[in-house]
Length: 361
Image (cartoon, rainbow, N blue to C red; front, top):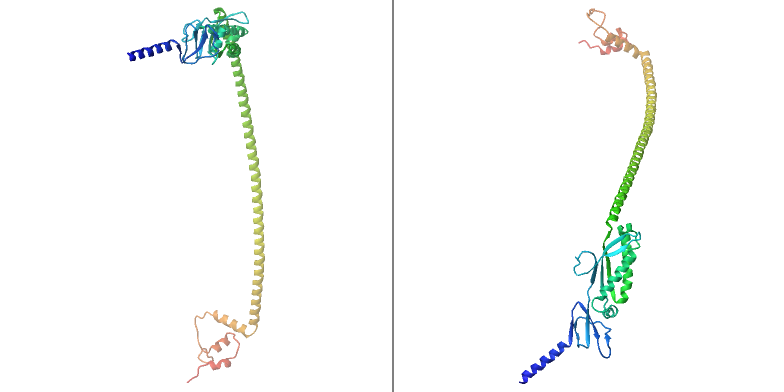
């Protein structure tokens, strides 16, 4: 019995605790409002994920997303998780009607959910605030553009950045942080779009003609540069050939001069050699003549005396051509050489050589 009572009491306590709590999910921010008594009103503090006090009817809880949210301004319904809104209609500086498809990304600033509730109210009224401020910024800032400027990406981007800055300044005091503002597309009145298209085609044709003109001009410049280059190359070739010819002539002249000097030097050497030869040949002839004269003089001197007569006798004997010899029987001794020499003209008497006679036995 005591055990059952205990379980009953625990169950009652758990039911009481469960009934007095509320759960805030991980992707939510909770804001509590006190409905009665002291401290009545919005509690100036955000509550994160978890379980928090909930005493009904004393407390009321409001929940806001903690993640990035998106509002899409477009005709189609392929918005996914974004809240869909009609496209933003803009009147250009020229008075033309322009329809712009855009997206706004934003997030409740950390610690400011209670401020959002205080400023915008409960439920999703804060989204209406974001939607209205985004439309106003787009209409005012993009409305300054002329219709043709909408086709220029640079112009659109400049205005978009200005709209982002302005929208951030207006949302921050309300506890909302702007993440970005994106422009998806811009649409015009069909008639005007046709006119713009034709004008763009005409402009492109004009640019094409300008490009062709510039191309022709560049081709002319290229041809001119090519001709100038060819002329310069030819001039350089001529100058090079002239320089080569000039240097060849100078080299030939130098070679000719060197050859002339060499010939002159060789002729001089030959002349010197011939002179030296002539001088020494003359000296040799002079010495030879002197030797011959001295020999002749000495020969003549030798021939003056007995030796000369003996030499003549000898030469006479050498020239004798005796074919037949008859010897007398008496009177001469033909086998005595001295006698024979005397008979042919040699000097000396026969008795001087008698000692050479053989003795008779």
